[in-house]
Amino acid sequence: MACAAIFGYQTTVEHLSWHIFLGPVSRSSRSICESIKVLISHDIQHATFKAPPPTQQQAIMDSFDFTLKVCRSRLKLVRWIPPLDGFCLNVDGASKGNLGISGGGGCVRNSQGDILLAFAFNYGFGKSLQVEVRALHDGLLLVEENGLRVSLTYSDSAILVRSFNSNSPPGWECQRWWQSASDLIHKHGFIISHVFREANQVVDALASYPCTGVDNK
Image 1 (cartoon, rainbow, N blue to C red):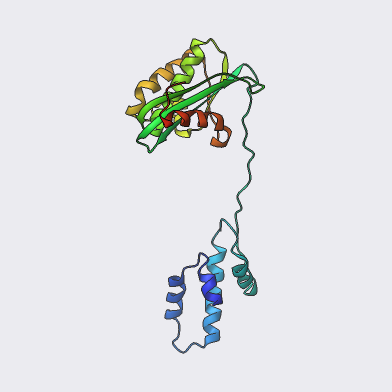
Image 2: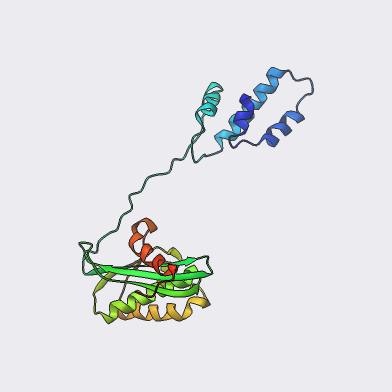
């Protein structure tokens, strides 16, 4: 039972069985257990686990003096970062089904977090990356039309942000809006930065709102 529990925690049973099979046929039960212990110890030393085992399995491993190398995830504080100067634009796109009914949303806020402008557009049927580009394009266009001085633009699409920073369109389906957005970026010197989705929740809700079939807002 102990061995079975250990095997269940990321250890290859076939690997151990093959090594035992290659050994002398006349091995005693004690020598077989010692061989298993050595092989498991060797495998564990060269493995890194994302989480510790359950309490029962941990107790079994402790009884055999096995030590696991666990790489624990680090907590990272994620929040909306206000602009130091002027305003910031956050945008997001949503597609229910990818290809599915889609929408885009965005808002402009000042350093106190007050919303000066917001939009939620229904884009019909579209793909995720396509509507991410359209939302960014429409947000930048609204900023230009309203004469707002935006110092930072945030999107939670890493692919989209990389495409503008490398000046390389992400695909032909996005080319029309991507090129227009790129022209606006170079014209006004907009800075495009990636933000985690958890810090983009306001525009995530705005982007999802048109997917319910409502008109543009």
